[in-house]
Image: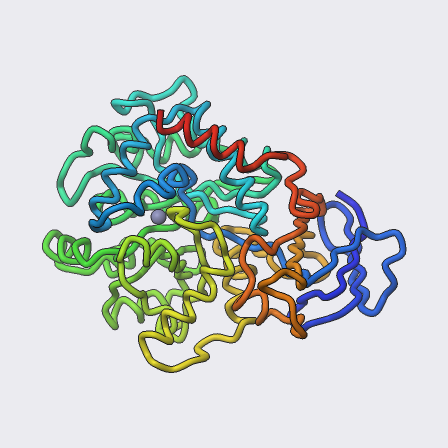
Length: 439
Ligand SMILES: [Zn+2]
């Protein structure tokens, strides 16, 4: 995609004004501050790099509003989530994910990390194409105009030494080798990368961890894992193996610069040193972690130990990366009773460059020559953002996803003046797809 864009204000690592952005082949080829717009597409607000949603389960969107009633824990929420999982087919999944990814595009997300474990038909029977569900997700991202990293998750057991239950049969390939064989048939394309995931140490026996790690290593692909979201997982792992989940993953080669630990809420000092020392990214999902009453993870400590940070909408309780970013800072303030653990620029980096890198797109998430032309315009004259500031503080601490007006992904305009160009009625598409998913 070729074109010229003109940003009234742009965040290039510094705040610049009247920036002409030239694009060829979907990449930025020139940046000219203090330029006239000429015939360029005018982006009237604060232009940020494309946002990366580091951790998503598309189908959880069907639970929004339904699981916020009543009380319970992570584990009671999971029962409701399993009922939705039981009803999905590849066609329904395509419609649901397309509408969810369109919602993400409207929120300024240009790449999603889809942590995918709903692989098979009910009872665990393979579809004609054993990757039909994963292909539906890749197709959904294309139809919504965003990039995707399909993090195909190995999921073999219901708990330490326990077989999958009835719903979980849909998640299981039976063995780590069978998982690797199925996933090897998925191919990267221009808008899609295939990565690996260990659902959790609950779901993959220790003997399978190395198989998943080797698969990712051979392809230099990203590898993600849910880690220590719940104290119960830590206790059961200690009982089964005598070590923490982080230590177990480290011992089987899962951690490293291409790895991401999702949540990492309940860690020991040794876990923090292992994650940081291996440069494993930690993906925080604060809106989900607070919705599910998980706790507050040690984001500041893991970053100081050496881990980059990314952010994810996870359960889709909301889809708003600005809210995820400020929640990480505000959680830390509540815990420490001190302000200012991250600057707005540092929080934005987690939502952009470091998030894209954790999904295997290191040349995205920054407005610079050579990077993907992913440009997100945040209005500076809404009721939330009007005022004298034009900088990232306004976006991170005051804006919501509703303030995103225009989105360019790989040089292509996918959202213009708040309207998705490929999915014109996103609320209608969501309503229909969610009704179809829970029917
Ligand atoms: Zn998750």
